[in-house]
Length: 464
Image (tube, rainbow, N blue to C red; front, side, top):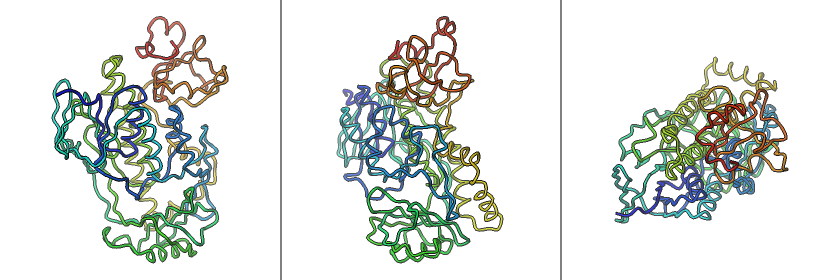
């Protein structure tokens, strides 16, 4: 059978579409297979954090999400007058962007299709076989496609993960949470508002239009079955009790009770098949990290697949995807679990800890430490010194910005005679820094070190 595409991506959610855009813009022929015929209105993910926006900025895609999102620089912490301040962060995007998942998917799909990716909807993967040269996938319409690589981005119930026999270990939470999008006749002031009390927690966040995301952890209703119908009046009653005011919700787009789970795939790669996004890891929505982790998977994997297919990958580069992303997901799972328990626990000790945190959040040092983690700016990969660190955006002497030089998705060499910055990357930074296509340092050193032992990726830098 002839190869249908270099890469087949299974799943057209944010992760799959971000990966498709990465590959297609690099000239890699890719097909996206999506079992849904139409996009769902239900969008559990509703925030985009600064590091994710930085990654999209590197490829010139961030304007699309900014157009459809609403910046929130001061999200609430739950004590009515306490808020975080994203303005403390060193980034062009000092805010959390409130944007429904379907809007993010539309922006990424447009970028992928414009670059040449083919997206097929209403077709599911039902079988999979691989050999030394490629992978064949059997589809629900009776056809078969073949590619050099397949990436499963098909969510929590991933068929690809099942077909390659990878375990998805973890647990389900017993408590159900209320979530939905609706309009409010009496929105709170400020519009992004949350309140934690003995009964639980409720929060509302405004979208760009006149709808709001409503999130409710109501201890009096968390034991109810997740599949129990959810009348709008139930949402209103809980919000009134928890927020101390009647926000008068109406005209819901969708409302749902759901139980979250924390699960992690045992491995991200089996031969020529890889996993990304919710197919590799899933966790509760606390902190909005699911979307961030999935898109960051796509950026990490995208350039490595490109290098492998084009023949310029150093030994072990594709294996480094799991080596780098697995611990990130494991740490995210640990911290989101802590966050969920912080938000929902009702014991005396938990309430005391929440009170302490609400006092500490008034201090900039405490806010900055927590915001840098939440925003993704402290994420780094293994390496000594500067290697593995995120590179912040900086002005370039020619009047451009550093991130604009990553549009081609190739490594970039910073240093005298190459790309010269107007401001240093940071204290103690070596004069020459080779940055990976996903914005992390691959190598850093002096001019003599560069001449004696240039890193492999240097040959593919757009500046050399």
